[in-house]
Length: 205
Ligand SMILES: N[C@@H](CCC(=O)N[C@@H](CS)C(=O)NCC(=O)O)C(=O)O
Image (cartoon, rainbow, N blue to C red; front, side, top):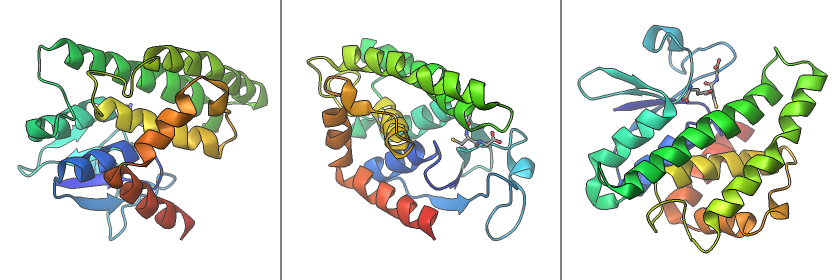
């Protein structure tokens, strides 16, 4: 399988899950500004949405949208418990968090902060929305190590990416009870640490 990604983009979550679940993957780096794929080709020819993560599966079919890519990868290795079993309450909680992170945190905050379509006021409004989202995260984590089902899941991989980027752009995650400790707990996992280190060095190169 091939994972189309950009260093430190939301595709980091899929990279983490592949490492956690020991899923062999060929990582294909994309320049998100030009959509060029390192080594040749355009992401648009793979995924007309032009976004990462994009997964090319072994049968050649393309899967897009982080929430579905993450669940697909987790379900490939049920024994990893990265994606709780279909039908379980933990699975619905995982989906609940994936949706919240994708729409309320990723798009509502980061997309609006970084898209060239936002003017300065829109960027400021987007940044100002972050504390309320982090308050929801803090409430969800109260008394829990992980977001859903008592184990690290694909939703934690996605939230870890968001919190990592938040720190890099000066959003104060430490203001929210337990969130910084949760981020450190994620970062202490060998697979998370490895994926982050690789993408940090790729981003710096
Ligand atoms: N709806 C997509 C959005 C993913 C997304 O926004 N990816 C960003 C990187 S974090 C991207 O590829 N942006 C490039 C673009 O949209 O032009 C998903 O949930 O996976």
